[in-house]
Length: 119
Image: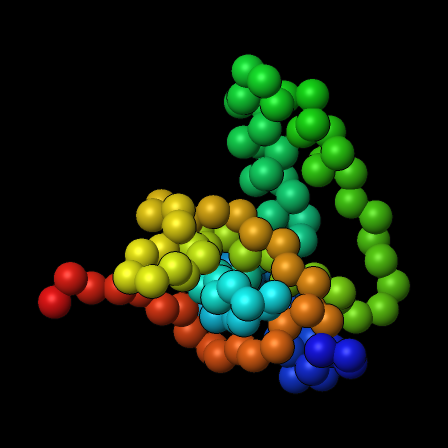
């Protein structure tokens, strides 16, 4: 999107202000479909930092995610957790991952997340 969708920016701002992680969203960005729950950036960063800290090889990167500058203005990114990239009949990863998506790169979106069934 050349100009971010104002409604999507409002949804992201509400997630940020409430520190809630219950908003399910599916977006199309750069041809990929990502589905999952939004989290406030601080919560998302903290969780990514924890995962990196527990890694034998990536622990040195955890500090990058701990620092959070309080930014003025509306959110510029969506922070997904328990999220999957939908590809064919599967979601990758099956257990859900942590994704950061620039709002300006979202070309379509809907409230709710998608999951597949074998039936």
